[in-house]
Length: 178
Image (cartoon, rainbow, N blue to C red; front, side, top):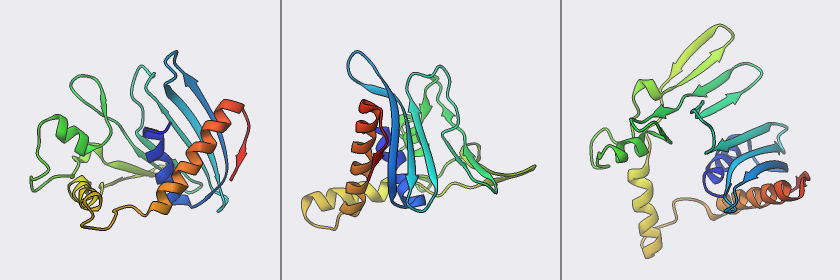
């Protein structure tokens, strides 16, 4: 939950705003790893996020699915030659040995783009270029004290609060208000 889940929660906060309550379920391995999670966030705006992730599934599914009353946006999963799913094109490129110094770094092939579905109408939506090549150097500069932090610390704290509430919810079986 605190690994991949932090990215899902961060995206939900960026897209839909602050969270008012959290409900979560998880499956724990004997080792204590929480590798199968479901988190429901009720946002202050009235929106609801249903976030899930599992390393236990036998086959990949959609990487992202955003559902609204007027349509849905779905991004499929890239499957590597070893059968594993890549989290994004930058990960796929690194595994393939591509350097972030290349001109097309962070771009994803059309096969990895999402689709906006409105009834019978379906539109391919190009992915934004990934920015690992600018984020990590900025992070390194911040650690060295030679640049600003690339992420507002208040955003990181907001994500951590939601994750702490999700852990409590999953452990105690309650809805946690923030």
